Image (cartoon, chains in turn yellow, cyan):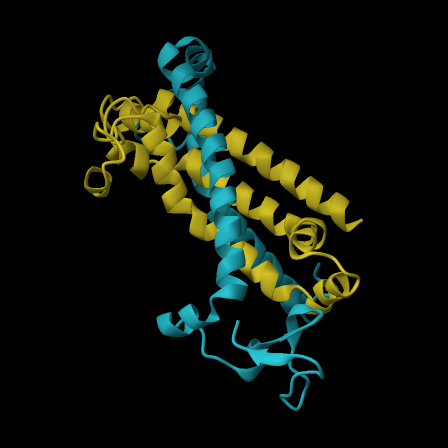
Length: 148
Length: 148
């Protein structure tokens, strides 16, 4: 409706049945988690570090790029991992957005509850879990390396 | 970033050890139990009611999953959507959290999210916008109070 009022696009944007719409919905659903993690990290930052950067004459964008963002990197990675695992596993969004959004969770759901084919559904879910767990393992290894 | 974390020490008696072990195994069962059931389903060939475990095992579901176009398409879809959503979520969440955590304290007060404490307010001075009050609540010389 907003789009139509503003005359931005002549056609109504096709969101409901496209993968772009699915991505959009996932962003809408998951960005608070990343934001929460990053806000928490920002609160934990020592303001004197940024002050030091300012006092050496750095411009604000330099402080942001050279000081703040590198300090936030662990939080950003954590938030990204959370988001990836969440979007990879989400069922409600692709299922609710209608036909043609066959991600793995939807396929598993269909096999389990439409065809009552537990074997194939369980297999699909195990494949999903293996992908997510390997990502998690890589993440913990990264953490350990960062701490050492 | 975290330096030195508090360790909860259980007493080193047999009671402490039992409590710890019980809790750990209950927790592990709670987390891994459902996943183990799925794993069993994915390799079960026949699993009927009175038997507690499958009576025959097979890998045919995994063979099936690697050839069915349904699953392969869904796998690609999942990976693409999750990757795109993660990247875009981070690009949305990062500026949002930077803005929320330092620029819009007035807005946060309006939303009632955070009560304002004097230490949250910053001084705006020649060395940049992020100087804190000193302990008496005064701004350092050469800067002024600013509710940023």
